[in-house]
Image (cartoon, rainbow, N blue to C red):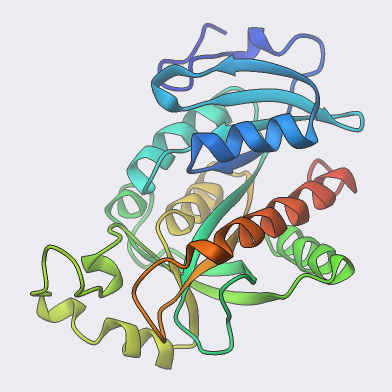
Amino acid sequence: MEKLYHIGFGQGDFGQTPPTVALLSGDPGRAKLIAETHFSKVKVLSEHRGLNSYLGFLGDIPVLSATSGMGAPSLSIIVNELVQVGVKTIIRIGTCGSIQEHVKAGSVVISSAALARQGAANDIAPIDYPAVADPFLTVALAQTATSLGVEHHVGITASVDTFYEGQGRVGSANPHLLRSQQGLLREFQHLNILNFEMESGTLFKMAGVYGFKAACLCGVIAQRTEDEKVILTQKDDAVKNAIEIAIKTVEKGITHV
Protein backbone atom coordinates (compact mmCIF):
# COMPACT_ATOMS: atom_id res chain seq x y z
CA MET A 1 0.00 0.00 0.00
CA GLU A 2 1.25 3.48 -0.84
CA LYS A 3 1.72 6.15 1.83
CA LEU A 4 -1.56 7.64 2.98
CA TYR A 5 -1.87 11.38 2.52
CA HIS A 6 -2.34 12.65 6.08
CA ILE A 7 -0.43 10.18 8.22
CA GLY A 8 2.44 10.07 5.72
CA PHE A 9 3.10 6.33 5.83
CA GLY A 10 1.65 3.04 4.64
CA GLN A 11 1.83 -0.68 5.34
CA GLY A 12 5.06 -0.92 3.38
CA ASP A 13 6.84 1.11 6.07
CA PHE A 14 6.26 -1.50 8.78
CA GLY A 15 8.64 -4.22 7.66
CA GLN A 16 8.09 -7.79 8.86
CA THR A 17 6.21 -6.89 12.06
CA PRO A 18 3.19 -4.69 11.27
CA PRO A 19 1.57 -3.13 14.35
CA THR A 20 -2.10 -3.56 15.18
CA VAL A 21 -2.06 -1.34 18.29
CA ALA A 22 -1.81 2.46 18.26
CA LEU A 23 -1.39 4.85 21.17
CA LEU A 24 -2.97 8.10 19.99
CA SER A 25 -2.10 11.53 21.40
CA GLY A 26 -3.40 14.94 20.42
CA ASP A 27 0.00 16.49 21.11
CA PRO A 28 2.87 15.52 18.76
CA GLY A 29 5.29 16.08 21.63
CA ARG A 30 3.45 13.46 23.68
CA ALA A 31 3.55 10.96 20.81
CA LYS A 32 7.31 11.49 20.54
CA LEU A 33 7.77 11.23 24.32
CA ILE A 34 5.92 7.91 24.44
CA ALA A 35 8.04 6.44 21.67
CA GLU A 36 11.38 7.70 22.94
CA THR A 37 10.72 6.87 26.59
CA HIS A 38 8.98 3.50 26.33
CA PHE A 39 9.60 1.89 22.93
CA SER A 40 12.59 -0.11 21.77
CA LYS A 41 13.79 -0.10 18.13
CA VAL A 42 12.05 3.23 17.46
CA LYS A 43 11.48 4.21 13.85
CA VAL A 44 10.15 7.60 12.76
CA LEU A 45 7.34 6.90 10.30
CA SER A 46 6.34 10.50 9.60
CA GLU A 47 6.42 14.01 11.00
CA HIS A 48 4.22 15.33 8.19
CA ARG A 49 2.00 18.30 9.22
CA GLY A 50 3.05 17.84 12.84
CA LEU A 51 1.13 14.54 12.85
CA ASN A 52 4.12 12.66 14.22
CA SER A 53 4.02 8.86 14.12
CA TYR A 54 6.55 6.38 15.44
CA LEU A 55 6.88 2.60 15.26
CA GLY A 56 8.50 0.67 18.07
CA PHE A 57 8.21 -2.33 20.35
CA LEU A 58 6.91 -2.96 23.85
CA GLY A 59 8.63 -6.26 24.55
CA ASP A 60 7.94 -8.18 21.36
CA ILE A 61 4.71 -6.29 20.57
CA PRO A 62 4.92 -3.79 17.68
CA VAL A 63 3.11 -0.56 18.57
CA LEU A 64 2.47 2.81 16.93
CA SER A 65 2.65 6.10 18.80
CA ALA A 66 0.67 8.50 16.62
CA THR A 67 -0.68 12.05 16.73
CA SER A 68 -4.33 12.92 16.13
CA GLY A 69 -4.09 16.70 16.41
CA MET A 70 -6.61 18.71 18.42
CA GLY A 71 -10.29 17.93 18.12
CA ALA A 72 -12.55 15.37 16.52
CA PRO A 73 -12.30 16.41 12.82
CA SER A 74 -8.53 15.91 12.82
CA LEU A 75 -8.80 12.70 14.82
CA SER A 76 -11.38 11.29 12.41
CA ILE A 77 -8.94 11.60 9.51
CA ILE A 78 -6.05 10.01 11.36
CA VAL A 79 -8.11 7.14 12.76
CA ASN A 80 -9.59 6.35 9.35
CA GLU A 81 -6.10 6.11 7.86
CA LEU A 82 -4.70 4.11 10.79
CA VAL A 83 -7.45 1.55 10.27
CA GLN A 84 -6.60 1.47 6.56
CA VAL A 85 -3.02 0.44 7.40
CA GLY A 86 -4.16 -2.38 9.67
CA VAL A 87 -4.57 -0.95 13.18
CA LYS A 88 -7.11 -2.94 15.21
CA THR A 89 -6.84 -1.29 18.64
CA ILE A 90 -6.54 2.43 19.46
CA ILE A 91 -5.96 3.85 22.93
CA ARG A 92 -6.30 7.61 23.17
CA ILE A 93 -4.01 9.17 25.79
CA GLY A 94 -5.14 12.72 26.41
CA THR A 95 -5.89 15.45 28.91
CA CYS A 96 -9.20 16.65 30.29
CA GLY A 97 -11.00 18.88 32.75
CA SER A 98 -12.90 17.41 35.68
CA ILE A 99 -16.47 18.57 36.33
CA GLN A 100 -16.95 16.54 39.53
CA GLU A 101 -15.50 17.53 42.90
CA HIS A 102 -14.26 14.00 43.65
CA VAL A 103 -12.31 13.79 40.36
CA LYS A 104 -9.22 15.72 41.33
CA ALA A 105 -6.58 17.35 39.15
CA GLY A 106 -3.65 14.97 38.76
CA SER A 107 -5.85 11.86 38.62
CA VAL A 108 -6.80 9.90 35.49
CA VAL A 109 -10.23 9.42 33.91
CA ILE A 110 -10.82 6.23 31.94
CA SER A 111 -13.85 6.78 29.71
CA SER A 112 -16.39 3.99 29.55
CA ALA A 113 -18.56 5.97 27.13
CA ALA A 114 -19.01 9.49 25.81
CA LEU A 115 -21.75 12.00 25.36
CA ALA A 116 -20.76 13.00 21.83
CA ARG A 117 -21.61 16.63 21.03
CA GLN A 118 -19.48 16.57 17.88
CA GLY A 119 -20.17 17.23 14.24
CA ALA A 120 -17.52 14.72 13.20
CA ALA A 121 -19.19 12.00 15.28
CA ASN A 122 -22.50 12.70 13.56
CA ASP A 123 -20.83 12.25 10.17
CA ILE A 124 -19.78 8.75 11.27
CA ALA A 125 -23.11 7.60 12.73
CA PRO A 126 -26.48 9.08 13.79
CA ILE A 127 -26.62 11.36 16.81
CA ASP A 128 -28.29 8.63 18.91
CA TYR A 129 -25.72 5.94 17.97
CA PRO A 130 -23.92 4.91 21.19
CA ALA A 131 -20.37 6.16 21.66
CA VAL A 132 -18.89 3.45 23.88
CA ALA A 133 -15.39 2.23 24.61
CA ASP A 134 -14.41 -1.42 24.32
CA PRO A 135 -15.52 -2.82 27.71
CA PHE A 136 -12.73 -5.37 28.07
CA LEU A 137 -10.00 -2.87 27.22
CA THR A 138 -11.56 -0.33 29.59
CA VAL A 139 -11.56 -2.83 32.45
CA ALA A 140 -7.97 -3.80 31.64
CA LEU A 141 -6.88 -0.16 31.86
CA ALA A 142 -8.68 0.25 35.19
CA GLN A 143 -7.06 -2.90 36.56
CA THR A 144 -3.64 -1.65 35.49
CA ALA A 145 -4.29 1.72 37.14
CA THR A 146 -5.21 -0.07 40.36
CA SER A 147 -2.08 -2.23 40.25
CA LEU A 148 0.06 0.90 39.75
CA GLY A 149 -1.65 2.70 42.62
CA VAL A 150 -2.78 5.55 40.34
CA GLU A 151 -5.85 7.51 41.40
CA HIS A 152 -8.37 6.96 38.62
CA HIS A 153 -12.07 7.13 37.82
CA VAL A 154 -14.11 5.17 35.27
CA GLY A 155 -17.22 6.75 33.82
CA ILE A 156 -18.89 8.89 31.17
CA THR A 157 -17.05 11.69 29.39
CA ALA A 158 -18.54 14.75 27.66
CA SER A 159 -16.79 14.95 24.30
CA VAL A 160 -17.28 18.33 22.62
CA ASP A 161 -15.98 20.24 19.62
CA THR A 162 -14.70 23.41 21.28
CA PHE A 163 -12.49 24.16 24.28
CA TYR A 164 -14.22 27.38 25.31
CA GLU A 165 -17.91 27.70 24.38
CA GLY A 166 -18.55 23.95 24.10
CA GLN A 167 -17.27 23.43 27.63
CA GLY A 168 -19.28 26.33 29.06
CA ARG A 169 -16.29 28.61 29.67
CA VAL A 170 -17.06 32.31 30.02
CA GLY A 171 -13.55 33.55 30.85
CA SER A 172 -12.43 33.88 27.24
CA ALA A 173 -12.75 36.21 24.26
CA ASN A 174 -16.45 35.31 24.12
CA PRO A 175 -18.25 35.74 27.46
CA HIS A 176 -21.68 35.48 25.80
CA LEU A 177 -22.61 31.82 25.59
CA LEU A 178 -25.53 30.57 23.54
CA ARG A 179 -28.53 29.50 25.58
CA SER A 180 -27.71 25.85 24.86
CA GLN A 181 -24.30 26.31 26.50
CA GLN A 182 -25.38 28.31 29.55
CA GLY A 183 -25.48 26.15 32.66
CA LEU A 184 -23.83 23.32 30.74
CA LEU A 185 -21.41 22.46 33.51
CA ARG A 186 -24.11 22.03 36.14
CA GLU A 187 -26.36 20.13 33.75
CA PHE A 188 -23.63 17.62 32.95
CA GLN A 189 -22.71 17.29 36.63
CA HIS A 190 -26.27 16.18 37.34
CA LEU A 191 -25.91 13.57 34.58
CA ASN A 192 -22.92 12.11 36.49
CA ILE A 193 -20.52 12.97 33.68
CA LEU A 194 -16.95 13.04 34.95
CA ASN A 195 -15.04 15.27 32.56
CA PHE A 196 -14.76 17.30 29.37
CA GLU A 197 -12.48 16.45 26.46
CA MET A 198 -12.64 16.79 22.68
CA GLU A 199 -12.03 13.49 20.89
CA SER A 200 -13.36 10.33 22.53
CA GLY A 201 -16.96 10.55 21.30
CA THR A 202 -15.89 10.45 17.67
CA LEU A 203 -13.25 7.79 18.36
CA PHE A 204 -15.82 5.53 20.03
CA LYS A 205 -18.38 5.93 17.25
CA MET A 206 -15.71 5.16 14.66
CA ALA A 207 -14.77 2.03 16.59
CA GLY A 208 -18.36 0.84 16.59
CA VAL A 209 -18.86 1.49 12.87
CA TYR A 210 -15.42 0.43 11.63
CA GLY A 211 -15.05 -2.60 13.91
CA PHE A 212 -11.89 -1.86 15.90
CA LYS A 213 -11.30 -1.69 19.68
CA ALA A 214 -11.02 1.74 21.27
CA ALA A 215 -10.36 3.14 24.71
CA CYS A 216 -9.57 6.55 26.15
CA LEU A 217 -7.79 7.68 29.27
CA CYS A 218 -7.02 11.27 30.15
CA GLY A 219 -4.92 12.98 32.77
CA VAL A 220 -7.01 15.55 34.65
CA ILE A 221 -5.39 18.98 34.27
CA ALA A 222 -8.30 21.28 35.19
CA GLN A 223 -10.73 21.26 38.11
CA ARG A 224 -13.79 22.96 36.64
CA THR A 225 -15.65 22.89 39.93
CA GLU A 226 -13.09 25.46 41.16
CA ASP A 227 -11.73 27.34 38.13
CA GLU A 228 -11.77 27.35 34.33
CA LYS A 229 -7.98 27.42 33.98
CA VAL A 230 -5.60 24.55 33.30
CA ILE A 231 -3.48 23.64 36.35
CA LEU A 232 -0.05 23.34 34.78
CA THR A 233 1.57 22.09 37.99
CA GLN A 234 -0.58 18.95 37.79
CA LYS A 235 -0.20 18.31 34.07
CA ASP A 236 3.10 16.41 33.91
CA ASP A 237 2.18 13.89 36.61
CA ALA A 238 -1.34 13.38 35.25
CA VAL A 239 -0.11 12.73 31.71
CA LYS A 240 2.75 10.54 32.93
CA ASN A 241 0.30 8.37 34.86
CA ALA A 242 -2.04 8.03 31.88
CA ILE A 243 0.85 7.01 29.64
CA GLU A 244 2.10 4.47 32.19
CA ILE A 245 -1.33 2.87 32.48
CA ALA A 246 -1.63 2.51 28.70
CA ILE A 247 1.91 1.17 28.28
CA LYS A 248 1.57 -1.47 31.02
CA THR A 249 -1.80 -2.58 29.62
CA VAL A 250 -0.33 -3.08 26.15
CA GLU A 251 2.64 -4.96 27.59
CA LYS A 252 0.25 -7.46 29.16
CA GLY A 253 -0.79 -8.44 25.63
CA ILE A 254 -4.48 -7.72 26.20
CA THR A 255 -4.85 -5.22 23.37
CA HIS A 256 -3.92 -7.48 20.47
CA VAL A 257 -5.82 -10.64 21.46
